[in-house]
Length: 343
Image (tube, rainbow, N blue to C red; front, side, top):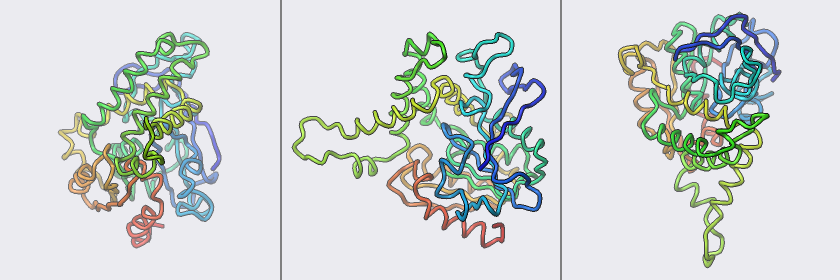
């Protein structure tokens, strides 16, 4: 996958009001030109980047299911992230300083509108497969509603049609941690405040990403006579430090708010009416142990989207199963896509 940058030449209006004076999008592609190739657009999740061959290397790469040698595969970094697309770490051209907490609130629809500009600039007139998991699924279903004639096949994994109160509770708890960190509020130069708070946010998030069975199986104490159990805590601290080393607290704060904007029914007459406008053949993939997006959320999507099918994956890994259960995911994708001659 080759990394590229797209610069939009005009101000970019935002759904919540206001605009960004400049817009730049970081994206990766498997080849230079989509002409004559099937187009596979991958929408990444919350803290991933645009190099899908990096974070989803079991599925994307030479000879993999999404073969970078055969298809035009593209993944674009979302608005507000810290991996090359305009976000809190970008310079505000009106002040000459980084936005940090002054970066405006953005929404899932803003993500999609930005990527629509990129799509048009690349001359992509049809997306054969649009696939997204978690917040990537938010983007994919929103795009299928905003531009229903664009997408041939839609794959939604571990997501819902509208952010639940359960989901917003996790997001709010993490924002509270960031807001309580004095270094985050102080917006310390060069803008890396909140790093310890971000570690705690990751710990909160990981509780929702995994499952009871997964933690018990992997993080139980090996010594049944230990005085204070800490293996699970050590795991959370380790994962928190890893995220803090590669991600930015201000981008994380921005993206949590964006996640809370997810509601495909907003100003469209409700969720059900919006879902019924989707024209793409759709596969909804649920994980039976996902506590963040329970199976019933994907059942609802499949029941309300025309031409939709449901597949359920059994896993002890909870929500993170979409990254780990590649054999099961490949099997259901083959049944859905290969049988129809899509890939």
